[in-house]
Amino acid sequence: MPLKLIFREATEKDVSSIVKIIASDTLGKLREHYQDPLPEKYNKAFSIIDKDPSNELIVVEDENTSTIIGTLQLTFIQYLAYQGGLRAQIENVFVREGYRGEGIGKELFKWAIERAKEKNAHLVQLTSDKQRAKAIKFYENLGFKATHEGFKLHI
Image (cartoon, rainbow, N blue to C red; front, side, top):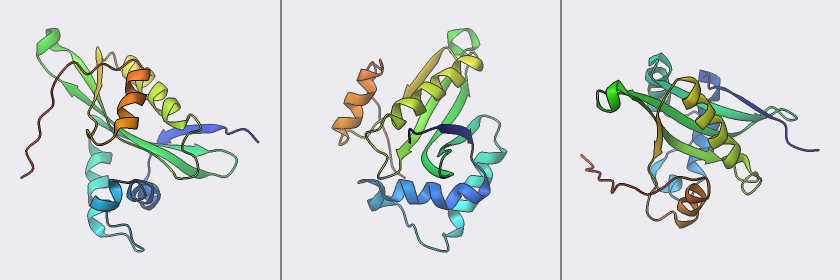
């Protein structure tokens, strides 16, 4: 049966599924602490994201099974440059194991770009860990260009 995708904002009951998907990723395994019950810090973070009108935590479900199969966070950043422009930052794009390679990631990005257009953002941006060569190629195939050098300072 072909996948039928439902995109929606995440709810508190989705947090455990989202963290499980993130923690199953190659780099996510090094950073996350998925367990049952989930550490409270994840629910606290969800509460902050959920209350912030500039943030949208999205899940995509397989309608046939009601399984959450992907997620992303979309943050809208208002700034003065570009004549008071709005940019959309895409973060934490993950697809559940067993569903990777089926076009879910492409659909997540398509959804996010359309959402950014609805909000009148003039730019969609993302960052990617340099270790993720396949992901970087995927983003380039979607039309993203590596126009800037990004910097981070872990504190």
